[in-house]
Image 1 (cartoon, rainbow, N blue to C red):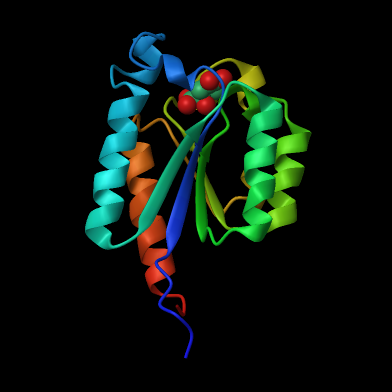
Image 2 (cartoon, rainbow, N blue to C red):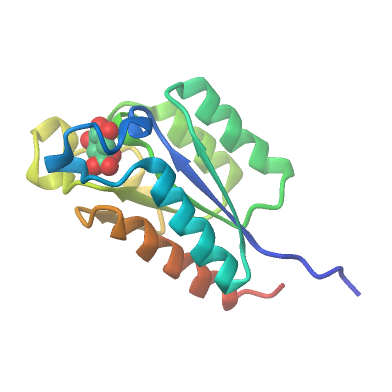
Length: 154
Ligand code: DQA
């Protein structure tokens, strides 16, 4: 019989999200990244799932982290690619390569902002997109991931 596998979720945060709390609160709210990550970890633990959070300002580090999933048992990804949303074919290609399902999250409503934010390199390969709900967006994405994974075989 297969060993019991605790399903796990990776939350990826792109550039400048380490500045949350200080950074343009009218767009991104007052929560720090640390407090969002803590809430996510508590929520995942309550549901019986593992959760890791990773933030980087470097495209290369984010790509390497995604590539590492090819040999790790991560079952779902929640990603806010931040500015790389609008620029990074390379990060998109990494996510396409590993095939782990993911949700794209944005704190702000990118469609109500500058036109250059209206295009995402991720949306068409994502399970779904949440944009404009602030930190709630991450919690909703986690709730979806939990329900999605609960309906998958162990
Ligand atoms: C963002 C929106 C992006 O356009 C921006 O570059 C970010 C954050 C958001 O969460 O609203 O850094 O992804």
